[in-house]
Image (cartoon, rainbow, N blue to C red):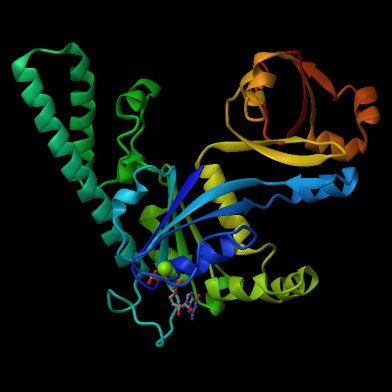
Length: 352
Ligand SMILES: Nc1nc2c(ncn2[C@@H]2O[C@H](COP(=O)(O)OP(=O)(O)OP(=O)(O)O)[C@@H](O)[C@H]2O)c(=O)[nH]1
Ligand SMILES: [Mg+2]
């Protein structure tokens, strides 16, 4: 799962990137307007910590996100192959940090970045449609008609200055444009980098009110974080960090929320595997059957799938042991067409 971070210069992209990737090795995290940075962020899941406490495994492996930090003047082409975009928007006031667009104005920055994405997609579509027309002139090709129709619909949307992510698409339409990498089609997480004072009441924040037209749009989410506070939190012990968060009225680090929202926008869920060696979260697409879910672990397990032993995390926590879960009938044997649920704990039986 690849996440692309974009935004205007000096808005806090690299500050966020560096904190999201803190526990993994990443290439130099100096603030850089030209360089593209790559790194890995862990998706914190409190359930994983609880399972770790219960199973005491040799290692615990969370789900991860691959991050790409495109500098402030980076070429957007680098974002064509990411799955979701994070647009970091400057909302903090600090005279020491100049803003490329003048006054701090999140609504303006979002609108103009949206327009950049829309124009880039529109230019691409004009080219592609012209090419399709040339080919159709040479020789009628029935196969090109559905794509032409879809791209014309995209063009109408873009000309109305609306991003493609707001359109409802059928699976067969998605297939037509797979690999084209339209920027405004990607799920979007707007991350407002706010001042410390604004953080404790993100909901009645004046800034968020200005962004009304982006709320409740398909494939779109808005989140406030304060990169400065996150940076301080990241340096504290976990006890000090939780005291500090209580003071600020936060119930979890903003970075955890951010990673989780990205995960959710991508339609990903987690199932868990547990044991004395390893407790691990596995990301899969929502709507995955047990047999395909097994492939997340190893293709052999998918190939030799016999059945899945499944207990949901909530049931396991309630009954506290596998034996008790069996007794209560919440530990189940499922076949290959079982739809895996978010939070299932699964042990695959397989034979190769
Ligand atoms: N006051 C304040 N300063 C911040 C905050 N977040 C980032 N900064 C400062 O803003 C400056 C730019 O931060 P970066 O993370 O380098 O921004 P960037 O978007 O990566 O910048 P470019 O890569 O040059 O486009 C740095 O001096 C940061 O310390 C914040 O929440 N509050
Ligand atoms: Mg940077």
